[in-house]
Length: 348
Image (tube, rainbow, N blue to C red; front, side):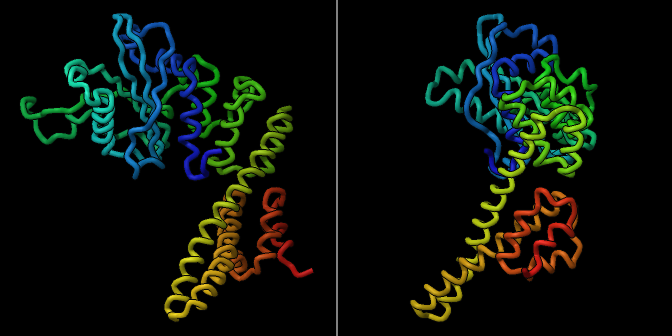
């Protein structure tokens, strides 16, 4: 399972990494003047990413190599912008990614530099706010004189998923279901999504996982909705995914807490200048780190289920003993409210 911090990338790649769905995406979303030049064969998915490391959490990309009817090849570079607010620097970022693609393609072969394949840039956006980013680098350069506007790249093709009618998202039912999910409208189209994604498929699980990780949804309400709609298999799958995410979140929180506690413990031990102090500091720090990691994880999971925590609840978590925190963690998934969770936080 992908790490918890980047669910957008997980679903984006799941949707387009399949060559058949990738071909349908190109047919649905490229202008006819370009789509008409594509050969019938599905595109080849090219491994690797070109996104800046600092933007990995907010951008995803996929590079495809596709044959043209002319007998030559072209690249299609799809960049998904996951920020809720459009980034005005995107055309500049996109141009740099395209240069990276050409440089990797050419490598050390000088002849390739004289015959670079075309790259068709497509930006996919599903944020809530309107798209206000310039259409090209030319629009970012402060000159009206075309002779001064030297460009490393031209325009890009924007597919604003939020601004499109649902039927226009794709003729491919699975792609349409995935794009609806990215728009955070899956609950309104639950029957269509369930019917579009066959039981037992990876994409069905990945779409439901995305809903659980990204949507601000009450688990009990979602279970009831699935049960009412007759989606018993989805209800069972939801329980499996929720438990897995809980365990993964606990593990990540503990790991982060242990690292912080260990560092603090070592620092205290070294400050005393005693080898014994260092050993004790490590042990103490590890214990503190585990406790802090559990407390942070409990707070995060409670906020996902019940919204922002009252100050008294936050203080109660901070002061709780590790065994009480563990008991509350075990109750998070099934408890209908905060009071039920913290009924576990009482001495027996």
